[in-house]
Length: 310
Image 1 (cartoon, rainbow, N blue to C red):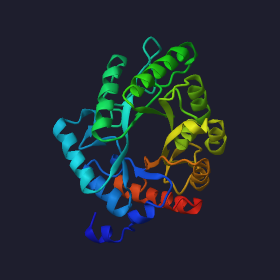
Image 2 (cartoon, rainbow, N blue to C red):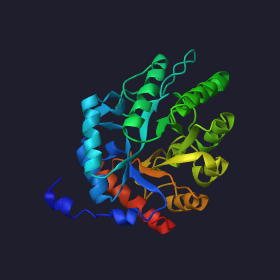
Image 3 (spheres, one colour):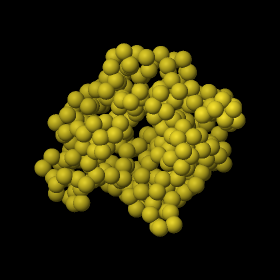
Image 4 (tube, rainbow, N blue to C red):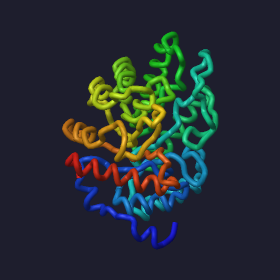
């Protein structure tokens, strides 16, 4: 991108963002694989004080060396950014003994390389270590790759989630379960079922209404939202999705799509929610990841203002 193009980009001061009741954040690799660049944009151009860590320098955060962790911490300090959570791929794997899911890992950086069920305890251990090193008390997790019929395995999966949450809790860490459209907990209503089945104070929800839409819950807000135990929402991913001309659901910038983010932000604020709202662009209609995230951030910022959360 040219210097002239960068100069025309709107900037949003940290003083403005600091007035929000939310921890306004972005997932770092939605901007750039270059961690310094991602942090510069988040802090300098977006005015954020918070960032969510998923991958950097071509590596999933799970695979960072000690030296790379040290460098990342220096960059965070340089831009005065705090970490909302570790966006770990924990439990993004097949459930043992069940038919192999059609949604199995693509081997991308978001899910890290294909991992097995046996590796999950190690991933949790690594995630807890990273959380402590980056001064956060939250780790993202999932509910295993989606099965056509989860019923025969549901009770055992619930128990595994519960035991993992308890293990994290013993280290003063909260697991935030993301409703992921390719996993067994994908919609608001499925998230409500999972949370109600697992009454652990160490398991919370990473609410992602656009993921629910992608799974077919077109009324994720307000329908799926209404089903949720609100007190257990402790993280929120912000993106959007829309039906294209062929009727297929695809990602869209936050300012356009099925989710009314102004209303969703207002509903969160009315609850007294004071946790992260983290931009997870996904949409790439702006060309590059960075350009697309600027566009999506503009829509998110507008929705925050219209909701009264800025």
